[in-house]
Length: 329
Image (cartoon, rainbow, N blue to C red):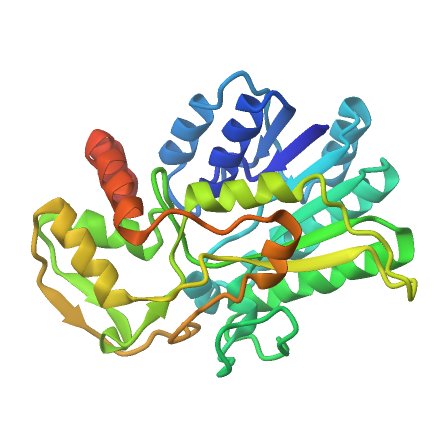
């Protein structure tokens, strides 16, 4: 396999790229290094990509993207490039059209034109919206997204299905649940909570703490992606499109307050908690049904919350200055 990872300066992309390189694959990394959060953190990740060529390129730039594909001859693509952030999308909806819609369409088209054998792409648990039936299953209705971000991710799934059906491009959508760990995103709750604790500041807890997330440690997510790479979907006996969607989560929702308690214990710091109303675009609870994924890759996430937070805190204390600087930007 010759693998392109887009969004390689991002949290999941960074870890995946390094894992693939360690496994001996030929990997190329791509990212536009946008300033949604601190570029210094993204650049620090890029600096730690081991033996991997890096291209600063925006997938919304079709000509440059096409030239890269023509030059490199990728067999597999993992698309993790996107404008991220549920809450940010509420007030900045237009920012999501360029990367998540135009950029993804460009990527689908160059994958088709250059004969890519398997496209894996990031979707999100946010597509389930305010679905009441738990756990979330891939067969659930997902036509009521609670944010523009979620709507663009659902659109990606439909666009990928169309290309799979029309052009026989094998594609796999990955609905990520709440991923955490070292080098995490500074706009997400684990890093926000940790930074506030280290600074001695109050932490904001929304919906008065009545929240639960299917927190999934980064190494488990990367293992799932690596195992999915060789499993390109095939057309079904009914000539259905070579397209599949999988939940990537631990399958065990954790109360947000339990997460905070564990983080406080590991850091040895007790926070002042400010309880607030639910924010627009948020959902109360996420919980992944992962049986479909397990049936394909024979893997169940292994890292417990306690072990995951231990590793996250160890990294955080080693890179405290970098992380707090990124949080301040």
